[in-house]
Length: 289
Image (cartoon, rainbow, N blue to C red; front, top):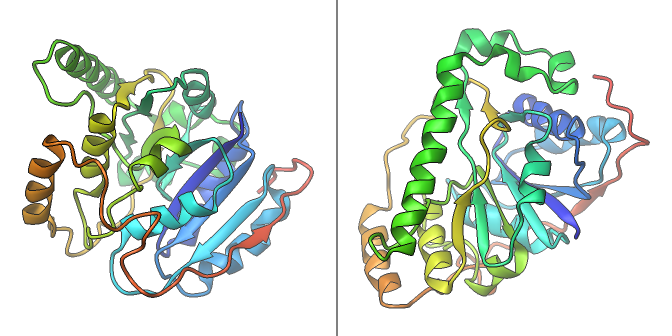
């Protein structure tokens, strides 16, 4: 099975760099990483050209125009470019414990998508994280017992939701969390990927989770001790949910069986095409910062 990591990004080359270094430190190294850009300037590609020789995998970079927050279109661009059978999605401000990707791969089953739950570091904790810690996959050492417990608590919730769904007492199992999930590419294509009618922050991942469940692909939380760790950064402005009315309309339609979105992987909403992918070959496995 070929595995691709898909990382949407917008600016912040510093945190994206840390995410890529962390993927190099994984016990299971992906076959490729797709960095899909929501319209940054040149800073992302410049960083990737400098970093690529020290990575253990090739990187594909794809971009489109900066026409506002378009997370759905950005992720769909990544799915289109990815060649993996199994796609592991990560936000561009995450680092990982050593077996995070391996846990997803070991638990990959047909008819399921997998989710996890991120640990969110404080500003003070994030300042303690060094490249050496990332490359040795020891970032978990800054996580508090209370933060670890939040991961176990969410997994127990997700297992309970999965049971309720099996018993017909809940319409879906665990929610899809777009920055910390994995799925077979063919399942994402079957439901036409993320709905590109979602513009602005919020609800596009909930929508995809509902549509996958309606299609017959159920969610499962497979992680406890292996986690994604969110690096602190200043919050984005204007993070109000812009899509609630559309989301409520779509959920009513999905419940009736409409698991395909109108605008997605197969028929993009906006006319601006993504850039031609830029392939940046990785090195021989060196990972020194």
